[in-house]
Length: 447
Ligand SMILES: [Zn+2]
Image (cartoon, rainbow, N blue to C red; front, side, top):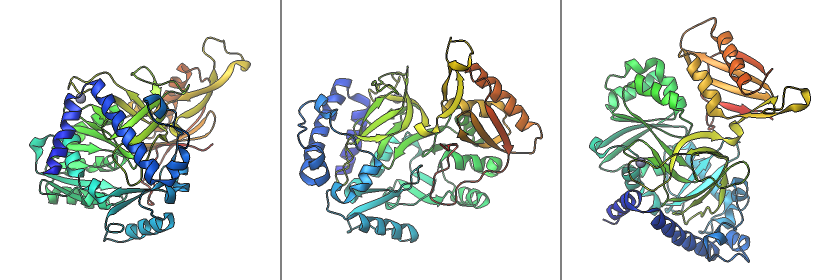
């Protein structure tokens, strides 16, 4: 019953709260969270010394933390007195075994390798993960008409938290993204699923065999990686069903899709501050945010308060669904996905002295590649040094001119950005997903 109340509370917040009501709610939750953290976490007690929290301005003056700091001080940061080394040992053991359990019978230990390769440990209480089915029902964007949900779910790593989503109305079967494609197709056919959940890179692996899926899923949900608008359309066409996104990180459940298909920040689960490259707050669709500061409003076991992430997002306009939760029109990537070229300053003529670094955002570069040739299944861009990139393309079928054509297109597009002479190499080669725990990265900057 308590969980049903949670479910309705989540619906009411998202659908009916006014902007003022959301702000008031967040301020109250933030205050409670900071008070709790200062009482129970030696790390925050030290960090916030001499920083009273009365107003939101006070909150925004609290020192930032990041993943490195979180890991360096993990033993002092969590509020249950858990030791860092012990947690890492537990997480590694859980990963290697089929039996996933709870730490001290009470807590889920999540582990992420992250794009930089540095490990992150995230503790959540069992009580909180037990609420997940209802959060999922209220916020996944999957229509209730598809109940009971029969989901096949592809992800790199398994976690106890996924098992906790299983309930009478949600059946969730996990498979690793390292599963061979024929086996994945077999499983989709055998289970007669209605919902397929997978990262975009795995869906792209399925694409050449999409026609072998006998019963089309009713809906596809993607996560963990960027889904470009162009690829969303391709998936829709090839798999024959709607495609929606969920924006979730180890740090929190950032955003989910509404019945209009738009991503809304979960303003009652996370408090997100957005800033641009100049450090100015971003409140509308006009600028891309390069700094995202996240506070998880619901996790008391390992409080994350003003935690800095480098996700690039663009906000959207108000959604016709009526929700006052902010809309994210596009998740663009991470700030280390931005490509660096050498070009001329706007309006300054083309003399050598007028050279400057030109930033090309990953969504723009991806659009050039994807719209160039529908025969490109997957690609990877390595920015070796400023003004030099190697683009690897994996084609559905052999096409001798594909590399040269793409190179010509990229040169033309970059010259529009006043990048006159980039070094571009295009290579045709098969691309597979990483076999370790790392995420597939399309954009790699090596400096
Ligand atoms: Zn909406």
